[in-house]
Structures are given as structure tokens and as C-alpha cells.
Length: 423
Picture (cartoon, rainbow, N blue to C red):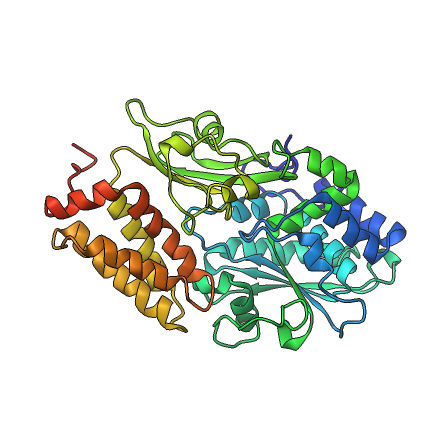
């Protein structure tokens, strides 16, 4: 069943009129006229909705982290930073149906008593920022955003904040610092952002896909939402980004828990004739490689956790049998080392050191002790201040675990043993 992308149209967004004709903003009306903030929080908690930005924390539990007597004003941030390599679901979602996200923000804002909403947009999404600014203004004119929404007494304004850039701005506390005009270094927690976030006031921060699920939960009920999943531990649908060696790369909305093999071969179209899956990143660049023997895993938070992996953003990156795994990992580590904010030593120094070792491996100047040094470096990166370096360590650790023989071949043969892709 298509839920989040049901209004998707080729080449253009869904207008406010079209969204309302499809039932849009009915959930907001129901909330404002029939439900208390506590009842809304309970519905979201009962639905099993988990954060779609990567952490998978129960959304309802996060909402309940803002106490009824917490200070005001309170803030809500929709995270559309989306700089995880291989991830483009938020771009697709916002291009398809921006009012779905706005309605989710308004419902969440009502539930936690927020009066200010902010959509944090990455620099490369300039067109999305323009769309959101226009559609927020249209919603404001329709009394759906701003003071006394739908004559209910609830008021909440929404503004679009254009990021200055850098991957670290996607981390919750760094994003809060960035919005306040500070250097986007992560903060030490506790206290949680739901207690002290923007300007030390309660702040709820969610990925835009998480917020887009909220109107459907209110409109159809928690049990309906849980029933959309194919796995008993999941709930709802999920936007899976499929890229790499597949014939049909794209963003697919499927039931949570859809097997990875089905995503690759049925929806992604499989690989070119004569090619085979060598490895796969199931949730973006900061997850562990899976081998071709592990493709039957259920793509939900619990299914991948049991395998010692993470669903992350649900970005499936497929690598075929002609791919050099050392080079693929080096490409990822180069990205992470460039995007480090430099705040802590394990990230700042560890990523650069890992990059240099992998460059020597690929270039043919490595010695037999390099794999052990890389393992120790990856362990040290897991002591970083925020999740950036531990996430970057995931593909590196799984390279050394799953493809140890290929790594040693680079050492024995003085460089990459694989032929170029055009041979």
C-alpha cells in the first residue's frame, strides 16, 4: 500500500488544494477539535512509529519527554538535512507532497505545546527550500499555519532554515547549534534536547519522513499503521532508497520489514546480466556491509539489529562482483574524514589515519600489519563524541570482517587485484 507517496505526481508537487481533496489536514482538524495533547502522544506511541532518520527511537516516547509543565516557548524542528550518502528519500517526499510534512509538524507541535516550527534544509536542496517557503505561506493564508489555527486557539508558525552545509549538521545537537548561529559542534547530553534544545528551551526534532507518518496515524488509527508492516516488530511503510549496481535505482515506498532481496531484485530490477551482488549497505554509508548470503534479512530496525547492523535511513547501496571493496570503503572514509567537524580526537585524527591506510592499501604500498592497525583504528573511532565516527567505522569494520581475503590480496599483489570495470 502506498501511503506517504500516494499523491506523488510526475514532474510536480501536490498542491494545497489537491492535498486537501485527498483528505489532507483532516487529521489536524480532528486533533484540534477532538483530542487532547496527551491523547495524540498516546496514539503515536501505540502506533509503534520509530524515527526514520536513522536512530529508530520511538516517536511517541520522545514526545512524552517534553513535560506538560516544561518552559515555553517550545520548538519543533523538521530535519531535512539529508547528507547521508545514498539517501534521497526526504527530497522525493518533499517534492511529492510537502503539505503532508507540514501537517505532521502541526500535529506534533500541538501534542508537545510547540509554537515555533523550523524546517532545516541542506544547501543542495535550494529548490525544496523555495517550494517549502511558498507552500508554508499558502498554508498560512488558509489559516493552517500561524495564529489561532482553524479557530482552535492553537497557534504555531513554521519557518524554513537553509543550512550552511556539512554532514555534521544532521546530528540533532549540532543542528540546534547551527540554527542558533553557533559552530555546529555536537553537544554533550544529558540534558536531552526535549528538555534543553534551542535557546535552552524544550525542542522536539524529527526527520521529515517521521513527521509525514503522523497524519496517517491520526486519521486511520495506531493499529492500522502497525498492520502496514510485513514484520511483527515493525510498523508502517518505509521509504527505501535503492542505488548502486541495480537496473532501476529509485525511492520505493514498501511495507516496513520487506526482505532486502525483494527490494534489490523485484523493485530495484536486479543487476545487469552476468553480474552478482557482492555486498550491500542496507541503511546508508554509516552501516555495515552485508554479504550476498545475508540478503534475506527483514528490512526493519529489529531485523537488522539481530544481525549486528542498523536500518539507518533505509538507503540500500548495492555493489556488484566487479567492485573493489577496499576502494568502495576508501570512498566512504574520504567522505567522513572530510565532513568531520574536528571537535574530538577519535574522529578528527582517526578518520584521516584510516583514509591514509586505505589509500596505501589500494595504491600497493601496504604491509601485512595494516589490517590489524585498521581494526584498532576503527575501535578507537567508536570513542568519539558523537555518532559520526562510530558510524564511519561500520563499513570499515565489516570490510575487515567479510572481505579479509580481498584486503590481504591487495597486500600480496601490491595493489588492487581486480581489473578495471571496462575490461
